[in-house]
Each structure stands twice: as structure tokens, then as C-alpha cells.
Length: 383
Image 1: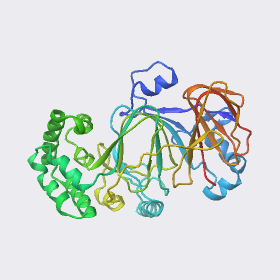
Image 2: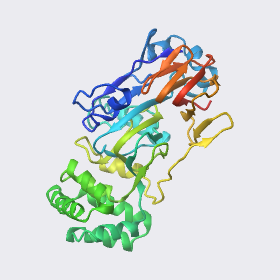
Image 3: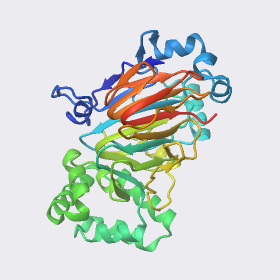
């Protein structure tokens, strides 16, 4: 079992206090957006044996288990994070596996540099992800019913939104969402910036259901993504609740602290709320124009005390243990690789004492007994 030393990424949207508060460290004044746990080449966790990527590369079958290597290849197929959002992240979607393979092969064939700012497909993998709230956590997830969105936009009293309102009311669901998102993202930039300014002022004045969008507009003045965001469901997760984001589902995280787990991929198509590249034609090819409930997940308890967040993906499986004072020791040994992350209290994992924000990597088949008082998240794969 390897104690992990993890990198914190200082993205501009990160909270200056959320991750330091969990870790019990003093804030630096700089944003601390994400703490990465895994073997992703961008910031692999460090162990006493080298980086986790180096450890796995040296003997994939020993570290990951034969079943995981056979199914996913000789790499850890997931990335676990602590995510502390102090401002909205970019509005985005992820491709499915076939789209990712096709898009990556196309950009490779056309010689698009791997680090080019206009590159869409950094790898040939999909990126399903699950976010689980540690504090109240605000996000946008999936399209709202078009008729409800028409009512929301109409209530702002902004004349330039009327064509969108009319489309949302007159067209079938798929066509309405597609045509409005396309119109927003391809509008004249100056005219759209003026519309967003008017929308921001109205959202500020009205508050209530409009308050999240007023905050988004404050962070991204004039950005067409503000209007695109208003097409989506706003959801507020309570601690322990989660969202699963599948392929083609537009989403953005707005504020709060969470545990996030995803397939090991960097493939993102952006819709707005970002200074980065927005490839509108490719985005429109990937987005699923389907309205629906965001589908808040709550964990399913098993007889041994494990609480599992069920998802349709095999690259990761996230669960948690809430360990009471005076509780028994739990044997977490598996034939697949694991990362164990403490988020509250004090938990002993093997020879390691874990405090909030600390984690260990457990190789496949390695004895993994845990005890203590606190909350422990377990990340592994379905193989």
C-alpha cells in the first residue's frame, strides 16, 4: 500500500479556501482548484517507489491485476480528484468512445499538434465522470425542458431573447434545443455581449431562480455561454449526493467542494464560459439534444457498510464508508487496483494513518484493512 503525495492544480476558477480547509492547511491566497490522485501523465501522484505512473509501468499486472490489464490495458483507467470550485468552470460536453477514437484519429491524420489550443481530442478515450458533493455543491447538468426554459427567458423581459423564446415554444424538443444553442453560439459577438449584459442586469434584479445565472454572468461578462447556461438544469447537491455525466451531456460546475472521478481522458468540447477554443460545429455534433431531469444519485448501501454510487461505466467504481466510533475493521481487499481517500475524521488503512485529504494506492490483491472514525472514499474499476 502506497501513501500518495498529490499535486494541486491552481486553475483560475478554483476556490482559495475549500481544499486548504479540508486539508487543514493555511490558504496561500492562490486558487487551489483540483487535487489529482492517480497516474495521469499531467500530474501523476508520487509514492516512495516513484510516481504512480512509474510504479504501474514497471509491473502493470502486479499493480493493477490481470483482469484490469486485460480489460483496460496496462494503465490505471481512472483519475480521482478533489475539486474545489470558487467560480464556474467552462460549460462543456464529452464525446463517447467511438466519437473520441474517430476525432483523435482525424486530428492525428491532419497533423494537429498535441498541445495546440484548438485541439479537441487529446486522446482516443471517452470521459464519463461522477461528481460527489462534500459540501453544498452547485452545478448545471443536462437540458431543461424547452417550455420551462422559454418561461424562464421570457420572465427576464429582454427583447433580444424573444426569437429564442419563440423557437423553444414552437419547435420539437431536439430541434428547439439545437437551433437555440446554435443561434446563441454563432450570434454576432457584439450583439450577444449586449444581450448578455441586459440578461445579467435582469438576473441580478430578479434573483431567485435567476441568481445562479447572475453569478455566472458576473464571472464571464458578455460570454454567450451565459445564455447557453440558461438552457440547462440548475442543481444543488447536498453532501453525499452525486451526479453522473455521460457522453454528450452539457454541464458545468459552479461552486463547492467535491470528490470527482472520471475515465483517464482530457477530451472536452466547450460551449462557453471560457477563454479557450470553442469548436461550434464539432460541439453540435457531440451534444445530445435531449431534455431531462439531472438525475441526482444517492449511494446504495451494502450489508458490509459500503455505500456505492452506481453508474453505467466500468472504468471506475466509486463508493464510501462512513465509519462510526468504535466500529469494526473492514477488509477492503480486491483483485483490482484501489485508491482510498479520507475526507473526514481519522482512518487507519494498513500501516497508514489518513487524515482528511490524504490517500493511498492499494495494488490489486494487496491486503487492505481499514478502521477508525470518519469517511473514506474508495475508487476502483469494474473488471
